[in-house]
Image (cartoon, rainbow, N blue to C red; front, side, top):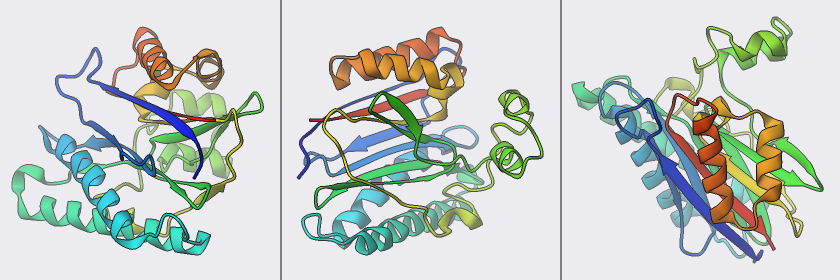
Length: 246
C-alpha cells in the first residue's frame, strides 16, 4: 500500500446559495471522489451526493484492493460509473423536482500499490511530479471537443460560450460510456489534486502548480488553493482534494 496523506475542502463560494459539490475519501485512503452537481433547486446537490454514495459502494463490492489487476480496476470503475449513472437517471425520471439533474465525477482508487484515475464531466485530476503539473483527465465539454478538433484555439476556449456545456456527465445517456482510466505508478513527492471546475475557473495551471508545490501538507494545500480560487473571482462552488505521496 502506498504511503499517502490527504486533505479535502468544499465551500459554497461567493456567488452561490448552496453547495452542489460533494467529496469523499474513505478511512483506508483507497477511494477518493469529487463530484460537481448540476440542475435546478437542490437537484444538483442531490446528484453529487448520490455519486459519492454509489461509486464507493460498488467499488467496495467489486474490488479486491490488495490484489486486483489493472483490468479488474477498469471493469470495477466502469461498473461503478454505470451504476451511479443509472441511479441518478432513475431518480430524475421518478421525481419531477429532480428532472434533468446530473453531476460530474472524478475518481481515484489505490489498488495493489498503484493509483488509478478516471473522470466524467469537467471536474479534473492533476498530478504534480518532478516539478511538472499534468492534467490527467479530459474535460467532457463542447469547448474541449472543439479545441481537440482544431476548430477553436486555446485562447478562444478560455471565454467560449459553450465552455461549461457538457456532453457527458452522470445523469445523461452517455454518462455510462467506457471509462478512460489512467494508471499511475506513484513516486515519493508526487502531489495529486482532484477538484471541481470552480477551482480552475479561478486559477490557471501555473498558479495551481505554484500553490500545490509550496504547500507543506495536504490540509494547507486545499485551503490555499480554494482561497486563491475565490480571491481570483471563481463564480462557482469550489472543492479540492489533495493527496501527498510519501
